Length: 356
Ligand code: PMP
Image (cartoon, rainbow, N blue to C red; front, side):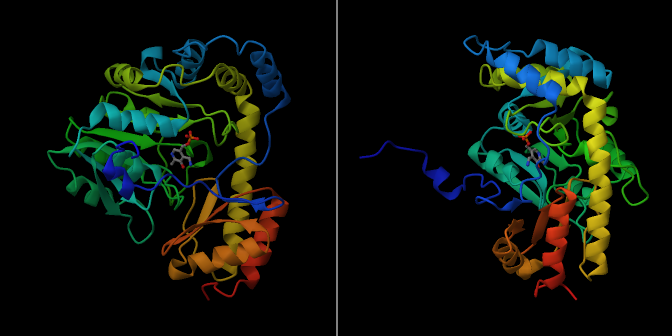
């Protein structure tokens, strides 16, 4: 007889990451193509020398640096084992069985898994026709049982952002017992523009005690393999997150690497400018080829290919390019180095499934 594992887990899928194979061009996981800067590598090597010791459980120095960068207090900031761990902690501090977690769909694949594992009820609100969060519909979906609303901004996988004015209206209308999580994993790739009217969530969280912002070192800061993210919000929420967090969640190497990356922030953010240029080049080339391409403020673009998503992705894999298909909805293409993007565009130009 096997151990009596919770039977409700049978219906919950495990999180499936972007796949790859040796020699493939991996444009599937929204990673940074460049490795850590020499200054960051140096700190990583130094930190390795003391891994016989436990890390600082509160990541005090890192939290203080993040707080200084954002002009908030250290008690407004928590570090976590990637921002996905912080998503899980949020649901743990807010939800018991039967409580509701509202989010857009499609959005980050971890939200439904985290909600269901907690015994909470996922409430999915479809994106609008432009693949943008429908905040009015999300507001209408909030009930007495709602505890958390995730707003993924920019949204993964569509890449779209919500307008500042719409988000402000939404936050003002959400009942105060509901925690709104602004998941800004792709914050550093967003730019002010007429279509996007992008908002810095930390600014919106000032004076709003039920707003929590999540960011990560995995994308623009290039530390996906080390697992560091952070939350910014009201001290009551930050304190509660610390109670459910696995002890020593952010390891000592990750803490040093994140600090070194903050010290090299200007250089790392300059890389995002180069990526945005490439993103726009890829997007325009795809439009030129006749594809419908969602607006993107992230390090990826989304092709809403519907039923053609899986064949498109399979064809790309045959050409040695790994993309991420969201069956029935679309394909997400991470922006890579210029030569990788060229290889993808070459494939897109010949793909039989293209939308013209
Ligand atoms: N939020 C969103 C929207 C994401 O796309 C991701 C990563 N794919 C995460 C959070 C988690 O990132 P990490 O745990 O690496 O910080």
